[in-house]
Length: 218
Image 1 (cartoon, helix red, strand yellow):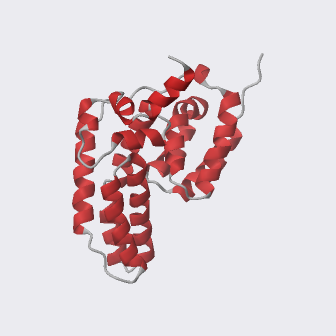
Image 2 (cartoon, rainbow, N blue to C red):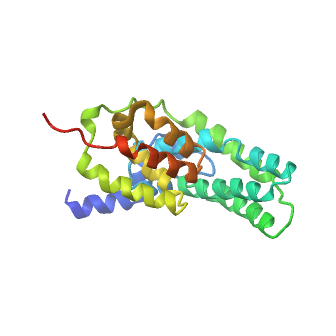
């Protein structure tokens, strides 16, 4: 297959979906091919992105309710905005649309209807938990491509600074190398992005930067 044909095949939804399990591509409300395109057709990166969605967004609507009960509508709106963006990133367009409607209601000073959003989110999380395969072990330090990693880290920092949810997808692509480079020091960054807290993720990445230095060759 030529490079042109290969590139074309990556863009075809049936080819992208074919790299995932039948159970995952059958999850209601999830367009797996669209989600895969967001991570450049890399199945392992997409699977990690889905796991982070499950870990970080399962209680998103509950958090929004709690913020409303505490008279913090701006924080509730933020939680719904994050849910909307992350749902769109993984290919859950219907959930993203419902979260967007609730977010808009808050923006306009109205009380949002959260029941349908909560039900849709819970159903998606349960379906993903049932469909996702077991996680893979982290890469070893020898897997680090420092020359390729540096520009990607700069891009990750830029996306986080712009509060762009695409940063989460990029993090999933880089995670094996970051885990090999940072070890336990990766935890603050990973935890922040698992919760889709991009501002905290930016702080964690900048704090980790001194450790992301290629060792001198001996």
